[in-house]
Length: 504
Image 1: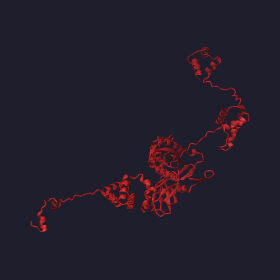
Image 2: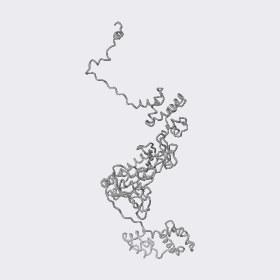
Image 3: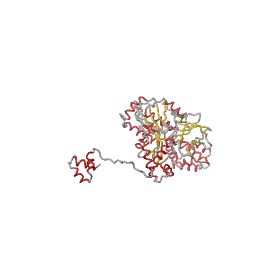
Image 4: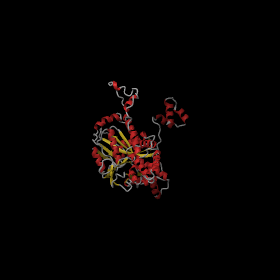
């Protein structure tokens, strides 16, 4: 191309003759004339196809084998390696790399491009849901979390919320958070065929949905739409957001101590997106959402109870088994059968006849863990104080309680070595049901300082420390001048003699 440009410039601009150009370039007359007359740079064109001496006889056979792939199972098709082995058995003597190169060329010529229709959505009509993964620094350690996404198709407003798992209760809580964030419920939501919503995939678009999801959908009154298996492009808006959210909101890795803190950060990031205009959209996300929110279905009066309800048996250690983990129940409130409600982050345990939980624990997603509240076992320890040293709940609690507790325990044991001191200490621990560790620690310090270090003394000091400071009111005696001098006059000792009958 460079030579073509130089020859044309020399002839048409610089006015050089063909002979001069031939001498300078070393090209023949015919070549120089062709370059001068051509308005496009020369290209190389093979007059005859390249003769592949070893592969040429097998090209049609390779095309035949590749054509069979259309009728074969997806995981049992002809590969370049297997084709090379086959034609080698038939007499091919060339290299495998030659076969691979030719197979690649054939596939490029026969592969049909994936084409999609541009879509347009009405306000408030459609939303899309998907899950994604991301890593965070959680309580000092790197951890993978599951992130729920919901995108409104018209405005592109998107909600993100992180959970420890993709369980159904997290799926429901994610929806509720999105509905609150959007200010309403879209008419239809598109999903993959995820197990938290779909019990069985039938032929075509038919699905058997999970009963719990039917209950949830009936509460919020939206329609569900399920994508064709393997066709993620049917909900491409939210899938694009999965990568966008991970790259823009979670780099560098968020450093958090709780999921509440992480989700507060994600919510703030979603709100900032309202000022961004998505490519192809006429206005920023926030402005289009303001138009869309009026078309959303109103939120129901009462939110859905997004938890999984399980009836469980209390074992002899006053614990219930949930997903391989054991959670403690108060010994004085346990029944043989109780009800556990599992939310994404908490486990609440109820008596069947009561509305308030008898135990609340953080939910564990590890295996075979014991989640114990030592206060649940205090009624048994009062009855059996001799088990104090070896009781597992107390040993775990004792490892982290304030040193002042040990001082009180030593004092009580020395004062009442017959067992009463240990029972008194158990009654002090009972106070944790109504008071914080900090308040009890301060009360113990005052009780030890005033020689009343026992359960009643600590209880008294808890009351004293929680009482407000007395407010002394000064009496206004301006309307009673005779009373203003009370307490101010000089003392007359002779008046005492009159009272006792003495001589003045």
